[in-house]
Figure 1 (cartoon, one colour):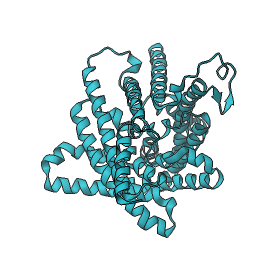
Figure 2 (figure 1 turned 180 degrees about the vertical axis):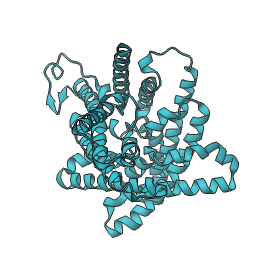
Figure 3 (figure 1 turned 120 degrees about the vertical axis):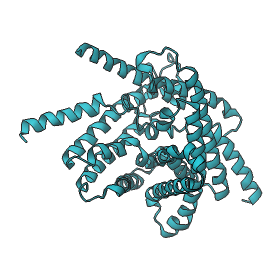
Figure 4 (figure 1 turned 30 degrees about the horizontal axis):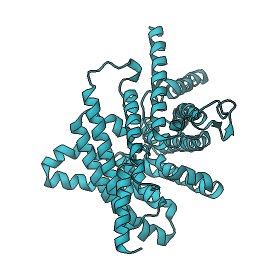
Length: 211
Length: 200
């Protein structure tokens, strides 16, 4: 394969993961384990970093073992590989940032049942070489991260008047009546719905233009 | 704590898990299958019942495994893997038993069982049970309440979605979008129960 071709393939994978097949607004997958922590931007960053780490590395690892794994136990092996990385994240957080681990509660562990991780391992890890599987996992989870960061930024600024814990001018002042609902669970549902709506609308416009 | 007090506590935790701290509407667990399978009441009831059964039994099994195997060995970090294996093995086992002894039940619930292994609500309940340090009796109330709460939420959602199947919805909002807005409204309604149980 020529380097040029490899480059265009990589670009293709990136576009798919970040935009065309975006896990959130296209597939609406894997939101269970992360939506809960989007009330604060900091929690979202840590959670998404954990997810990026798990998805890209477990997809690459599954790919390394793809010829050695018997078909009928594949799901079990994938679960064990994902579990291995989730445990690493959990132990690291527990050792270096226990307060964050307490904040995130069960959600770090829940990465294990996040549909995206298993989905990427099945779609790419099980069939493609490790490098490609890693890139695909990385791009898909980054596509996921950027949408969740948008949601988290709106929720924290509108609901608490802060960004990363620092007061934001105007929104933290007396002129802004804080929208407490944004930091409660219904706020997360509404915000996610709006984001899904907006990006789907944008995509549809783009596709119509392309025709 | 005496047994009587524990049973009382268990009941309070159960009511809280159904209404004020609904595992789906407050903690967003099991959202994928909630969006995917809530188009019709029949499917929603099937999945909901299967969730109640599996969440109650596996959370109790996980409690036993955690407190009698992992804690004595000092291997608490491995709880993720142990829990998921127990859930997957149990679901597989139930599927085999149901298929063998009750073809009728298998027809009704069979298709939903594989979906349950990856349902975050089941795994999430087990993790919450560890974090909140529930005793065995309290865990009974908690897991049963979580299952019933999930069932109620998906049943209500399916009822609403069936009614609005013919409504005209903006294109970008069709499917998941409108379901999320409905879930948000439902979550608002469930917050209204918060006054019933203070501080739980």
